[in-house]
Amino acid sequence: KALRERGSVHQVTLPGGVTAWVIGNYADALAALTDEHLSKDSAGIHRILGAQLLRAGKTPELSRMFGSSSILFMDNPRHDELRRRVSKVFTLRRIQLLRPRIERLVSEMLEALPRDRPVDVIEHVAFPLPLVVICELLGVPLDERHQFRDWTTAMMEDDPDRVLPASRAMEDYFDKLILGKRASSDDGLLSALVQLAERGELSADEVMDMVFLLFVAGHETSTNLIGNGVHHLLADPRRWRLLGHRPELVAGAVEEILRFDSPVRMAPYRWTRESVQYGGVVIPADEIVLVSPLSAGRDPHQYPEADNFDVRRNATHLSFGHGIHYCLGAPLARLEAEVVFTALTRDFPNARLAAEADQLRHNPSVIMNGFSALPVIPGGR
Ligand code: HEM
Image (tube, rainbow, N blue to C red):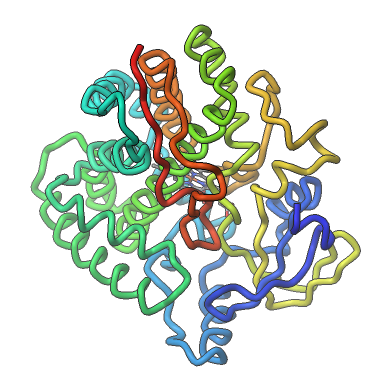
């Protein structure tokens, strides 16, 4: 709301000292996500962000997240070609086959919860579930789980001194893992990507950047979806109980959570190849642009009573992006959330929030939008 009240488009200074233009209303955000004048090419991001970091007295180096072979940071025609090759192994069928395993994982996690005292839903469900799922999907051993938590959390922060060591440590780790997968016959996604590389369909850098992206993009985003959802469903216990009685409404509720409190505050960096005009504002060439699905999701020009959370709203949103970079992992994120909310509302009909909204803290991140902790009393049946 604060963003949109200042106009759909305006310049902000991010905590790391970087300046960017934020696009906050729905119509402009939708147009910007498919505007070819707004590039995602990593070379431009390195050049523009690097110069800005240097001016702010920081190391002008970016993490491996912005790798030059990452599908998230390249334009067409290269993007579609790479996405087509990756989609051969990252298939909908591979995701759908995960349902029974995700259901089992969720029921084990929920059985371990105490009933009568506050438990942090982020620590016990929202964080570990997507982590275990992405590790199993990729075929990554879970023994380094605590490292993963530190790495992915640091990767989302704005301070390069925190981001870069985490990025390097992850790269070293994945390097060794990829090497080990060359002789492996497991049916994980990482082995499948390595096999594509052995057939000459992917380069070594494309494998590394893909693993990086899947790991980072596929984890904290889903954690935030679950955490934000528990918060908004429990904010009015009638919503929670409705889903407990009517599980067929859960899928729609997940979409409403995505609209109402997007796990992604800003879609990751774009830059202007030439000057563009949005909302009557001219953004010059060579500027960083951030499109905000979080703000767009509450735009009253797009959604009647935008600030009302309504599990039956049945509206589309921009939280998985739009256009060629539309989230590759959307079916997985939806599946995880659907399984979690179905089980939670069924097994804990009397759950309640154990902290007031103003006591909750959000993770410090320009890109991500989620709670660092969310205490809930699960309650008895
Ligand atoms: C792209 C959001 C979960 C993998 C994106 C984009 C958004 C997004 C907004 C587009 C970014 C842009 O245009 O700049 C989300 C949200 C998630 C989620 C809200 C969870 C609630 C996942 C998961 C995976 C994943 C679980 C994989 C395991 C990707 C990939 C891309 C992407 C690979 C890049 C696609 C491309 O550039 O072609 N995601 N994501 N995401 N996401 Fe997700």
